[in-house]
Structures are given as structure tokens and as C-alpha cells.
Length: 239
View 1: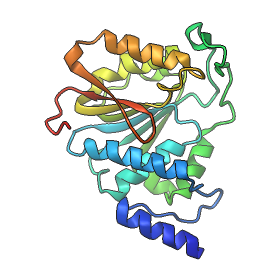
View 2 (view 1 turned 45 degrees about the vertical axis):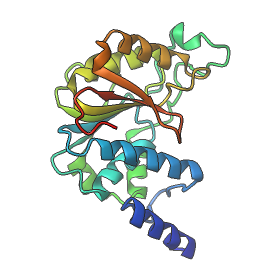
View 3 (view 1 turned 180 degrees about the vertical axis):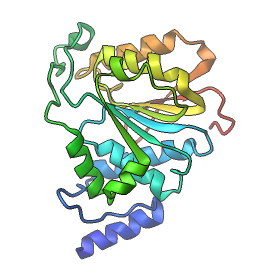
């Protein structure tokens, strides 16, 4: 391990309890964006400490965010009583709708991210220091398109990360999983602010939140990342 990595680990250890370890197949790329995302996820997961329920991500792809989320939970001793769920088809995006193609700079296309796989998620977890046994004890990966896998999900959720790209996918995730999000829980949206590349994501979120009672969900922007997230009503530690 290089001297630079040891210095980074001292900062990560003091601030977040996270350490970089050598991976068998690929390594964690520590960039300024990586640090910003680490702080963002750490802040949101800190907010739901004490909120009962599991953690889920819809749209796992290569597992970058899933590995980070799970590693933060491990480092903060907040995995006890929780399970992390990762939902993805790992077969590429389904066809885009008109809502997804409503901007001339949209990048939505059927088959995007078709290179991803459960195996690549495992490699990412390994790069974060997870053994196969430890990952199996903490994480469940659920292959399949959301319309096939989410209706049968029946676990309470404290935190949900939606990285679903497309209008119909966002609608499916929110329709099926919002009822399971516990009071004080957080739902974070990866593409909400990317209105040119993924216009369908914001449209789906706005429509869904508009269908709820105004007091049920509070939409907020993270100043560092520009990402948006929702707090479900009932958080007595609001602020």
C-alpha cells in the first residue's frame, strides 16, 4: 500500500470510518467526485440512523454506489438488523419512452448498461474489502426488471437510492417501494437534476410526488452534489 493511500486512509478513517483495501480484480478509483459522493451518502445514511428498515438500491449496474452504501453502513455499525437489497436486470435498459426522449440531448437508449453483471458487482464489493461470505450475509442482489421483482418486495425500508434512469422505471420503483419507506426514511434520486440526459426521471418523480399529500414528502437538494432526495414525513430529527 502506497504512502499516498495510507494518508487517504487516515482521513477516511477519522471522518467516515472507511478504509481503502487492495482488491483482487479492480481497485476503487479515489477522485474528487468519489469523495463528494461519499460525503453525500454518509450524510443521508446518518439521517436514517434509528429509522427501522433495510436499505435498497434500484439500478445497481456495476455496483459502485451499492458498494459505497454498504461499506458506510458497515463502518458506522449500522448494518445490524438491516439488509441491503440491490435490484437490476443486468440486461441493459428497456426501451425508452417519449418522456425519456423529450430533450434533444437525451442519451436514453435500449440496451444501455448491458455490459453490467452480478459478477462485476462482486468485483466492486471485493475492491471495497468485502469477502464473498460477508457480502452474502449483508446483501441480496435481485436480478430482473423492476416490474417483475418489485411488486413482491415486502420489507420495510429506511433508505432507497433510485438510479433507474428512465421514466417508467422511476414510476415503477416509486409506486412499489414508497409504501415500504418508513417515516423518517429517505429516498435519493440519482438522475433528477440531469434533465437533459434523463428528462424522464424528473418527470416521473414530480408526477409521483404531486400525487401524494403535500405533507407526506419533502423534496430537498444537496448543495454539494446537486442531487435531490425526499424525506418521508415523520422524522422527529428533521433539520
